[in-house]
Length: 172
Image 1 (cartoon, rainbow, N blue to C red):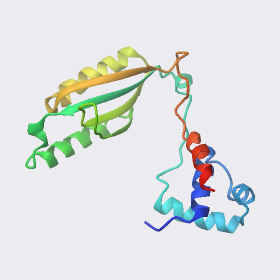
Image 2: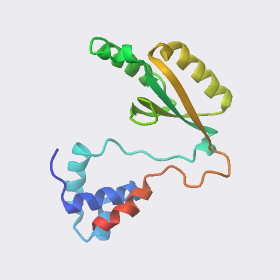
Image 3: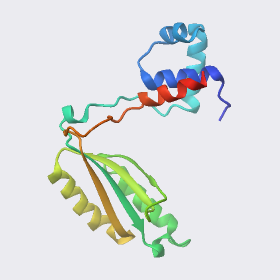
């Protein structure tokens, strides 16, 4: 990856706040030409920006639950001889779960992996969890989930990347 310049960081954090901004608007805001923004954004799209998307109001789309599921992988399946086959099986399963919005290996709390998923309701989550245990349960010693009610009054700070732009403004 190319080394990011100061203007690149500024562009990225402005895009965190609003990815729909035009190059012209960004140029005015950051005090550089539209051509500079266009050239730098093109490089960022190649090197750094995975995609442009939006963060929905989950409850307005009918999703009630965001669930973080942690798994402790059985030591026997994490051995050198089995690791690649297990990884490929897990990746194939994960890619067929459209409600999972992120999954990764993790460290801490005695767990090795996690995923974040959204569900329309508890019944959908319960069915997904049942299938998860049936299809992937042989790989895990322990599976724990944390359920977040997206419709409740306890969502104190909704999931959004715009918050990152505020913390990073100290860079410029």
